[in-house]
Image 1: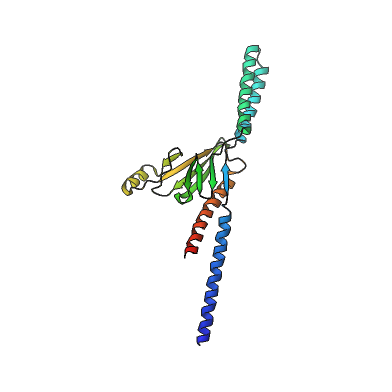
Image 2 (image 1 turned 180 degrees about the vertical axis):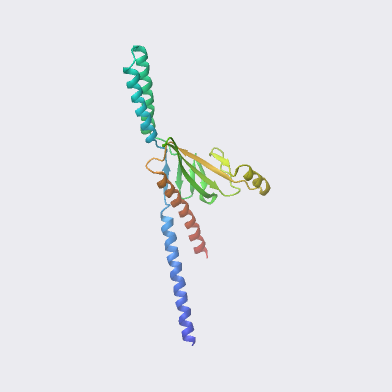
Length: 213
């Protein structure tokens, strides 16, 4: 009877160890997806292309349809200026709006640790079906206030302020905007990359806890 109990105990221990090993392996896979860093730069394609088209059409319409030479020249210059702005918006190198790192999100030289980020949201904004910009909102845990210089707003409106005044733990968002999107990434891809880095940080914390235990 004792042999059966001993066998069952060993089988249970082996199963528990197997499940633990599988869980740790899964955490390491998640952690690997958030290694290194990723610069997120604004990049305009659709809106910039629209301005280029409008500029060309303006230069053609104002430059060829008028009878006044001076007015035609001014019209052409205006059209060229509009098209030039579109070309600049499309081709000019942009500085990173923010950087995803293993430690957190770096904005304007300041680090927002992943432990301070409770949730996030990526939204596409458009006008007349033309994408204008993407907003990235990082929702921070209660009591964490982003450093000065980082675009921020108190969360929850009037109710949130009343609750913060009562609990002495205000809630903030970091608001980031990309004209008219993220270079080399769609909104879905950007959402996935933020998810990868955030999940990797959580997995790293869990691995540290398991190893400490």
